[in-house]
Image 1 (cartoon, one colour):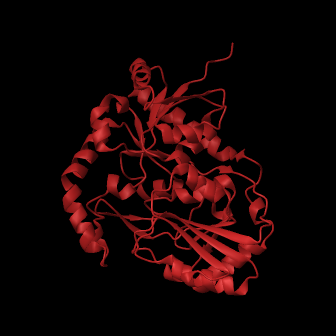
Image 2: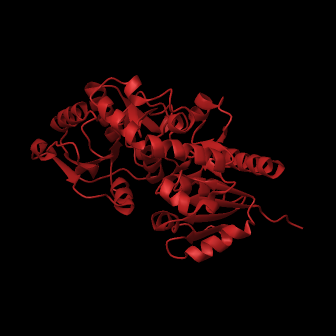
Image 3: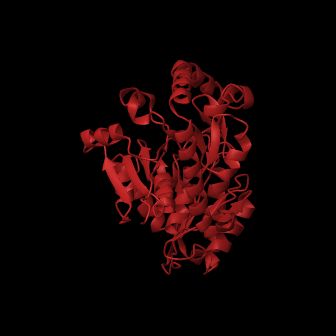
Length: 374
């Protein structure tokens, strides 16, 4: 007699559809997966017809969700993103005895050693101090409540786990970057490059604009640059437009559907990551205490990507191109766009990395067993 598959309950109340999508894809063959989420992530998961996948949209049928959670018929419950404190207070029983996947390691595990204004001396430091004061009471309450409520914390990558694995609350990590789509090379006369992320005054767009302008002068193809985020920088990108080069920005919020559509239609993504970022007054370091979801999005649709060299991804290293300055950015743009096989590095129409499937399955079984024995 075949043993019934154990059931895993995944809760996502934010909009990290790329995280829940990747986790679902890696474990659905080994577990019954029930996802409790909102309309944004519901749409992202609706493309899958996995036999072991069930999706409950709490925005459409909250009584059904709460009835399911009260039964507690699942092997383990994992919350994909820390919920907003206001949501948590209203729905605290949803998260009881859940595991929590954290995305900002310093904020959750070592906030006072990593206060932004004490570690970074720049024009953002004063603002970070104001934010620290503003969020101090709620942040302290949030951390205390979540440390008490959630059984264990889980890291979103091996690198982040190894940087913080001495913390008693952090017990495991997931491999979350493992879906790759094959995309044929573009034959269009216009090269389309997407640059995701909110445009603000703290990101260095100087090298980026200079590099793109210089490459445009050397290319015989037109270039369309789509900046996928609200423009809060005060930079008027239209002044850089020429007959060969055009910049497009958005004044309003870019929806998840629009975001993925633009990446899907692009020849290349350039990710202008900040190495040192601030979250509620706490310093986070990209690649060391915080990861970028944009890299996973590029991998998912098969879009080649160029990122700053300080960010070592590890798991998707062979699919990533790095730049250091304007000169190396120009070279990398040329290398990617001239390499007719670049789109084929994401091998297979949609494949799942076996290592991720095995590892994530083992971690869920281990966490579930620990929960049962505790």
